[in-house]
Structures are given as structure tokens and as C-alpha cells.
Length: 487
Image (cartoon, rainbow, N blue to C red):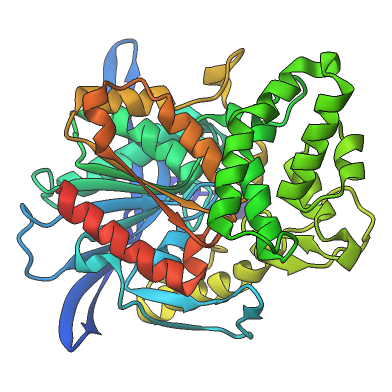
């Protein structure tokens, strides 16, 4: 019986503690050495606890994994710092980290020329570290980030708690590293743009932390622009230019330049097309036939198909239908990529070939890089994308209304008129189409004086536009120029 008894030390969970590892590195760019420090590992998030109005101390709630790169011997008061994350929701920061911004990047290949396993990582001569320190943050349940023992990870799988926890990481890092007087930026991709827009407002209101700039890559600020639910015809019009771009890339609209085609698609999507959808069954036969013909010419789909779907081309169906005659599907994240499904007659793609093309290289590179080059060891699986978090993500704050953070971004800009916004979109992005982003930006509730604070850039690739080398180099140049102008 005595052998079954456990001491207090044996039964009490170990107190969570930061496990950061620091390493020194050198990157040579155009003959010049860039010396920097990498700090990687988990920091503990603690919550103030009160019982009956009495302060009971700080309770550990979660351990958040981050990787910070800081230039050696730089003036902290003048040196910008960028806090970067991806989206999902449920995604780690691996994509921006090893694809675009970090000092090392994965060689993943591109559409039609995928890299062969086991892949490789190389120095990133275009890294943002040339112009800004960078802190990559993995939200709870992504990467190596986890709730501490006894806590529920689901508490962090929602809009508000996510903002609060990532905002707390930013506050802690800024305070511990003496960076309150540094120019500060956010960089978010996909749902990370939702998070970044929310954080721009949250950091101001909660901590009085005003930012210099927000970089939004593959944007979703208003979910209604992407929501193909019955009764919402808006996405059908906003996706049309992206459909046209993808069809053009695959040679289905050969008699027009991409620029002319997109201009034509945008005009139709902003005029005759929404007018026709709004008429419903009141539309005349001649008008309907005209719209069918125009949509076929713009999308590469058959008039018969467009007629059968009642003029409404849903995006997942488009990816399966466009190259059906070739028994191929096109990518959602990047329509330049093609693949095969087990059923060539399926209504939608079962797997996204553009995601399949990059998940292997990025996963291999990250797991090697963190242990071998950054010296951080953890036997937990690095969660590239937590499907558990994604499928259970809570938007309870928006019950009964559309999910949007456009109002929060606008408010942050009105409160801080120096806040600059950079917006990046891929022409072939079938997840967050560029015309939907333009629609949202055009309706931001900001005064005319602040409209020039927003800049937009476009790239000939998809959601992760940096997998396309020319786009990656141009995007790196654009982000560097943005930071220099906004600091």
C-alpha cells in the first residue's frame, strides 16, 4: 500500500517555464555580412487570477512557441521589429517564416516543377531581416504551442481569445527586449490578416501600443465576401476575375492578355453580372443568354455548365470543373497548380494540389531547421496546421451578424492616422480572391485623408505567392520599401 502512495512532489505538475534557446548566425548578402541572433522556444503565458476580489497571482495558461531574429549591434530605438504569423485558423507561422521573411528559406519548387524529396533550405538573400527584426509567432495548438497541463486548448480556438493571447506574446516580447520605442509592424497572411487587423485595434486599446504599419498578405477582412451560402450572391461576382485569371493561365482564353482579360472581368463583375443575379427569375431570356455567353468567355467553362448552375459558379466546383476534360483539377490556394483526383467526375476536388505541393517541403525544412540549426529540441510534433483547431474555431462574438474586422482596421487607422497598411494579393489565389479584397478596402470607414495610407500590390501567383520566385523577389522588395516608408 505504501508503494502506491505518491508524494506531493510526484503528483504536482512541474511549473511551466520558458525554454528559449539562443544561437548566433551570419548571412552574407552581396558581399556584406549580416550578423544576427536567433532566439527560439516557448514562452509561458500567464493570466492574472482573482478570487472574491483578491489577487491570487499569475496562473500559467499556455506555452507559445516563437522564433525571433534580431540584428546584432543595432540601435533598438531605430530598428523596426515585425511580428509575423500565418492564419488557417489553426496554421503555424511556417509559411511566412521559411517561404518569404526569414533568413533561411525552403526550396519547394513551383507549379510544373516541384522539388524532389528530401528537399533543401538555403540562405534567403531577400530576407526582411535586412530591414527589420522579426518575431514569428505560432498561436496555441499550432507549431509547438500548447495549453499547459490542466488547461483547455479549445479556449484559444476562437476570435477574441486568439487576439488576446497573440497580443500578450507581442507585449511580453516588446517589454522584455526593451523595444517599446522601436517602429513596430504586423505581418499576417490569410486568417493572419484577420488577426492582424484585429490586433491593430486590440494593441491600441488594451496596451496603448500604436503600430507603424500592418502588412496584409492574401486578405480576408470580411467573411461575407467569400461565403457561398444560399442568398448571398456577392462571392459569385467577386471571384469572377480570379476564375478568369486561372482559366487564362491554363490556356483556355488564349486570345487576350491577362491584363485585358482581368479588366474585362472586373467591369462585368461590377456591373452587368450582379445586376443579372439580383433579378433572379425575373431576368429576361435574352439577358440571361447574354450573361451565360459572357461568363463562358471569361471563365473557360461551357455555356451549358453555366446555364445548369444558374449563372452561379461556386469556387470549389470551379476548381473541379475547369479542366475536367483533361481529367485534372486546379488548386484552390494557387490555381496555377494542377493534380488528379481519384474520381474525375467529382463535383469538387478532394485534395488541393497546390497545398499538396508545398506541405512536404515546408514540413521537412522546419523540422530539420529548428533542431539542427537553431538548437531547439522538443519531441512534440510540430503542428503545421491544426485541423482540430480549425474545425472548432469559434466566432461567437459575431453571432447573428457577418464576420468582419474591417471596422477594427478602420478604427485603428482613425485613432492612429500614421498607421500604414500594405495589402498583397495573388492573381491566382482561389482562397482569398483579390477582387474581394478590393471590394472591402473600397468600403473602409476612413476619411479621404487616410486612403493614401493604404497601398496594394499584386503578384502573378496564388495564396502563398512567394512560392513563385519572381513574385517572391518582388514581394520582398515591396515589403522592404513599405517598412522604410512607414517607420
